[in-house]
Amino acid sequence: MRALLVTSVGVTCAAALTLPLAAPASSAPVLSAASARPPSLTTEPGTDTTDTSGTTAPDTTTTSDTTAPDGAEPRAAKSAAAPAGSTQSLPLAPLAVPSNRVAGAPAVQGLPQRDARPFSLVGVVWDDAEAELHGTVQVRTRATGTTRWSDWQDVETHNADHAADLGSAEREGRTVRGATAPLWVGDSDGVEVRVRPESPAAPESQDRAATPVPLPEGMRLELVDPGEDPAPEPARGAPANRAAVPAVFADTPPTAALPEVLTAEIAAASAVNAEVAELGASVIPALTQAETAESVNLAPGAKPYIGPRPRIVTRKGWGADEKLRERNFGYTKSVKAAFVHHSATGNNYTCKQAPSVLRSIYRYHVKSSGWRDFGYNFAVDKCGNIYEGRAGGVTKAVLGAHTLGFNTNTMGIAVLGSYGSTNPPAAAVTAVSKLTAWKLGLFGANPKGKVTLVSGGSNKYKKGVKVKMNVISGHRDGFATECPGARLYKKLGTARTSSAKLQGR
Image (tube, rainbow, N blue to C red; front, side, top):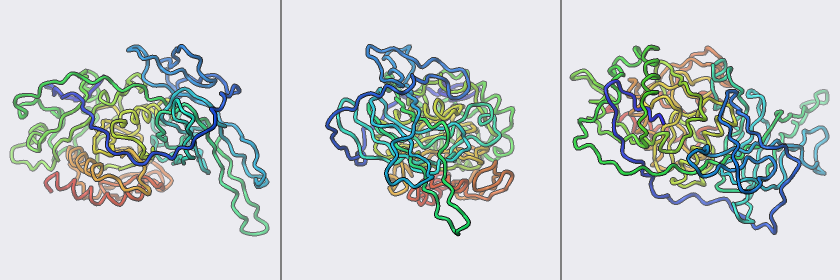
C-alpha cells in the first residue's frame, strides 16, 4: 500500500484508523414485502470479468461453494489472496412494450426482477463515453436474505460531467465508457431496473416531425460488491513531541513561490518518492497550525496562509485495492482551485459504511467506467471525515477525473451523498473548509479569491476558453450539471469564508 506521505527526509508514523460510530442515517428506502423471490433468469450471458479500463487487470473470477446466478461474478472468498470486492455486469434488453407507448418512441430497456450475488452499489454504463443518456434510470433492489424489495429509486444520469478531459491520456488511451452516477443501495441480492427514454418532443409545426431520442448502445447494469472492510491496525503510540515529527512536505517549495515553481521535475520526483513510501498507514494525523507551517519549511517571518492539516484517512484506511488502478500517477503543475461535488450515491449510508461506499465508487470508476483510478482527489462523508481519493500523494498536484474540461491544475472533492433537495450536514461543509484551507494553502491559493482557468472543453465552455471562477467552485461552475446539488452549492460561500479564516486571512 502506498500511503503516499512523501518526503525526502523521513515520514510520519500515523495513528491507526479509527472510524467514528455510525451517525443517525437518513431514512432508508421504503421497503415493500414480496410474496416470493423471483427465479434467476437463465438467458443472460456469463460473467463479464474483462478489464473495462482497457489495460490488463487481475482476474476477478473467484470460486464459491454455491453456483452463482447467470451473469453474476461469484463473490470473493474471504482470504488474504482474494481480490477485494467484485462486479457483476449484466446487459440490458428491451422490456415488454406498454399498451400506451407512443408510436416511434424508443423501447424501454432494463432487467426484470432477478437474483444476483450480493452487491451494494448499482449503476448503468454504455459503450460510447461521449453519448448522453436522455431518459430516466430507476432501480429496485431486494435486501440480502429477505423477500423485501425497495421502492423504485432514481439513478442520476449525469452524462459524462465527471470524467477525464477530452484528449487526455486517460481519456484516449483507455476504453472509457459512458456512465450514470453510482447509487448506494446497501447489501442486496436481487435487482430490477428500467431505463425509460425521453418522450419525443411535440412538433413545433406541421412540417417538423418529432424525433425520438435513442438510448445509448451497449447499456449494462453494473452491480458492485465493495468487499470486506480492512482489518483494524494495532494502536500505535503517538510521538512524545509532535513538533519534532519529520516534515512531510520537504520537497515542496515555500508557499509564496508554489504556483510558479512546482515544476514537472518536482512532479516526477514526487512520483518516485510516492512509489517508495511503503508506510502502510491508515490515517494521516492532523497537525496544528504551527506544526503545519513548520512542516512546509517557510522562510523566517513569512506569512504562511496555510490552514492546519486535517486528519485524512488514507487509501489503505478505506481499503482501496491498489491492484485495480493504473500503476503510474498523473500530475499537473499546481492546484489553483477546488471543485466541490456530491457523489450522487444517495444519503442512505452510515459513516461506518463510508469506506464501503468509497470502495464501491472506486471499483465503478475503474472497472465499469474505464478510468485509471478513483476520479476525485478527496472525499468527505456526512460526519466530516476526510478521505484520500486518487493515488499520487495528498500534498501533490494529482491530476483527477472529476470536472470535465477543468481537471488541470485543480482538485476535486466529493461529498458522499445527494444534496439536490437535502441539506448537507454542517460537519461535511466544515470538512471541506478544513481540507481546502490546507491543500489550497500549500499552493498559495486564497479560498475567497478568483482564478482564471483554461477550459479543456465541456458542454459549458469550449476548449481554450479562459474562464474566471471562484477558487472554491461547484462542479456546475465548469459544466452544465446539477452537481454538487442545489443545497450543497448554497453552502460554498460559507466554506470559502471559513477556509480563508483557517488560513489566517
